[in-house]
Image (tube, rainbow, N blue to C red; front, side, top):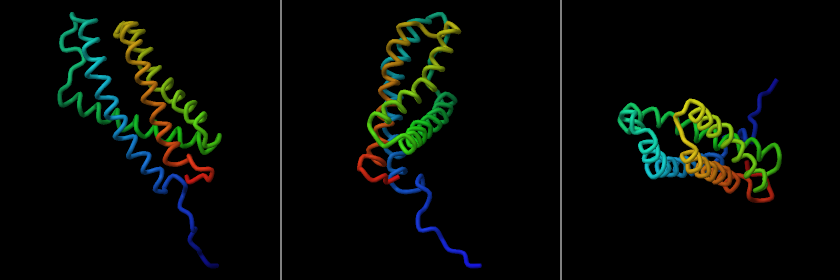
Length: 154
């Protein structure tokens, strides 16, 4: 019996996927920092002045935020890649996949915060559309690097 190597690596291991992952790492981190410091932090502090040190930024929070961003980047890259691969590499599929990731991650997060009276409608109206834009752009980045040509590159 002879063993041969497969000429193709698994699709997710090809360079376009890793380029999309790197681009999403940059995009999502910029977007998250912007949304937090420009909108969420000031709005949380205005809405909940009685809560000491709400929406802080210190070393423990920064480290947890790094873990959050890592999980978010992986989900915002891999899930749209799977959807684009399964349902067709179109911008429509990317928009739907990005919206799905947004609802799953940010919809649950902010709905839970609102349900526990830790967010206001105003905060939701500022944070959710920006988060949706972030996830849709992340899915379009995956489309751009991996699926924009007629040939599935991966």
